[in-house]
Amino acid sequence: MLITTLEELEPFAASLINTYPNIRVILLRGNLGAGKTAFTKAFCKIMGVTTEVSSPTFALVQEYQGKAPIYHFDLYRIKNEDELFGIGFEEYFKEEGYKLIEWPDIALNLIDDDFITINFDVLENNHRVLSIQV
Image (cartoon, rainbow, N blue to C red; front, side):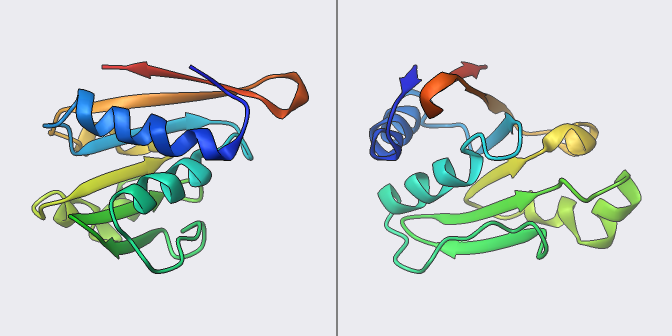
């Protein structure tokens, strides 16, 4: 899907939830500034989150409450699986709700749940192409 404005992320997120109603883990892949956190903001908005949504780059995980709990991870600074255990990453998968994970590659061995991946590719004119892998 070609995204030309941030406003288009909300209907994209809504369609994702409707198309994959049983998926609770969403992996977000793309370069810095590709729109991963912007997508998470749109996702949280349609899920009824009323608090400010921000990047968890330094906190590693942000928790939000909407129609369901949402856990937003940014694993960019994580170097190995031991660090994931240190932040209790695996414990979040015992919880209900959505897990949105930026820079997910370091955690793939720890994710047992079904997931989808959204790839963010930046084009000219600051447009993005979002593709979904199931």
